[in-house]
Image (tube, rainbow, N blue to C red):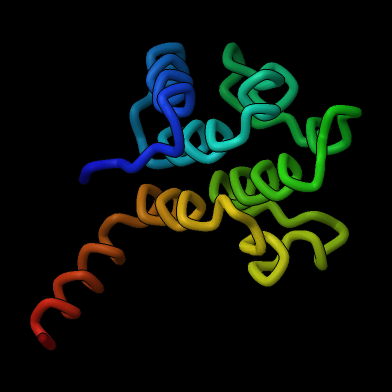
Amino acid sequence: MKIQFKSKEHKMFYENMMKQCSKNDSYHQTLFYTLGICPDCRKHIQDLYDVHNDKIMLDGIHQYWQTSGSMRTTLLAFNLWNGFASENTVESTPYDLFQSEDCPFYFEAVKIKYPEYCLEHQKRSREER
């Protein structure tokens, strides 16, 4: 599957993080792809992901640098990692998360996480034509 990146910086971040981690699975691919969408998340990756212990850092949601856009990106990334939902569920619903200019890239993250379902849908769509 060819991945669509938002920018050259997004792609470089994704590739660098995938090299740093020891696993090449859909969890890591999706996490780094999603967090890489947002420049603030890229800049503060150490607040969001612990490379040495291979875990997301939930406290990263409450960091001073988080904006509404970086918060959406972080919440989606964490949800795709392990199903995490914010205590304030209003902020972490698709209704709120996908109200963003980054929406096309959020859909790309879902395709990376669930390729088997997305490919099946694409196949059915072509057959119906």
